Amino acid sequence: MSDERTGTDATDPDASSEPRTQPGDEYHSELPPHTIVNLAAALPENLNRPATHTIEISTPAVSRPDRSFTSGTGAVRAPTGPAASEASLQSRRERLRPAGGSAPESAAMLTPDRLLAVNRRTKPPPRGAWNSFVFAATLHLVNLGDSAQVRAHKHLDERIRQEFEGGTRFVPILTRKGGVGKTTVTALLGMALADARDDRIIAVDANPDRGTLSERVTKQTRSTVRDVVTKAASIGGYTDFSTLVSRDATRLDILASDTDPLLSEAFDEDDYNVVADLAARYYSIMLTDCGTGIVHSVMRATLQRADSIVIVSGGSIDEARLASETLTWLEANGYGDLVRNAVVALNTATQGTNLVKLEEIESHFRSRVREIVRIPWDPQLAAGSVISFDDLKPITRLAARTLAAVVVEGLPADRGI
Image (cartoon, rainbow, N blue to C red; front, side, top):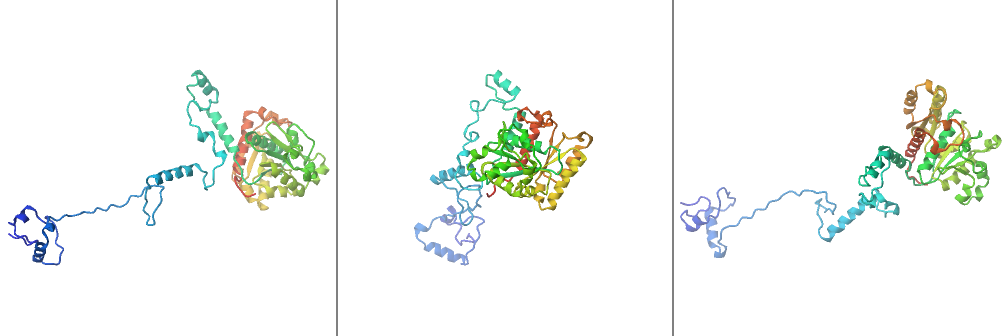
């Protein structure tokens, strides 16, 4: 019996012992079957062997998140040997470098948090009454870490200590209503900033109507803004400038205004710019205690330099209205960006606070500004004399520190000089 596809006899021993085709194979040649047999018989004996079939299996390449090079066709290849070690080292370097560039790291990047492995020997002792007691009672074997209150305090410090690049930040504190605690808020804000930050902070009294900012700290000099303007050409460094300011325990520097109203009125836009230019050489943040005269030339120079503003409002109806009208005036005169980034310090120590709904006042300002911070009543602030930041009530210090953190978060972190 002949095979229909090969044309060979079924009784052929070669064909019966080793078939050249398997069932299910298809015939794709255009030659007739007998031609195939004749060609096979004409081949040399060493080639007349069972056919070997080679099957090639192609599988799609699976892309992997490998940080090696990529070929032009998009295939990802993983380097091996020395190339793999070098790629891994570069990858670690990139992760440790600051985001946004390949510049070398500064020495400030070598922080204890990055270099020290946290264990029982390197973890600092906990702060907080109960946590410290457990740490001492277990002979330093159990370290629960800082208490929630201490962690919150440290977190607030981190917010206040935001670093700046590219010049001094200017923050005026203003309102159209007198007697709402604007000078007190300026002093509290400056003390909270100076107490938490490592750079220099200055508060300048630019009130043309005899400001009292310098009376909130112990006076160490009788110099005023007028002396700075007069001696500007001879000020060659911070040592010269520091002799003209008073410094309190928090390291806040305060530059007083003139005590003579006639001289104060003479302090104009040009004089303010002289003081601001000198302060920009030595300080990271300059607070300006502004007067109520919003159309005064000093106010114009102050607003032109401002990175953010603090509006002080009392808790009474007329005080809240005048603070809101201050925002309206600023918007109408091209300072809309400052209004949207403004912070309202709501002084609850003024008269009439207990008769109004403070939450409604806050709701109104929240629709216009970035943040509102309440300043509580404090007996030391009510006295109107020298302020000792450490002796304030804890809730007052917390309000001042919160105001400082909110103000700092609204300042540009990096900009051109």
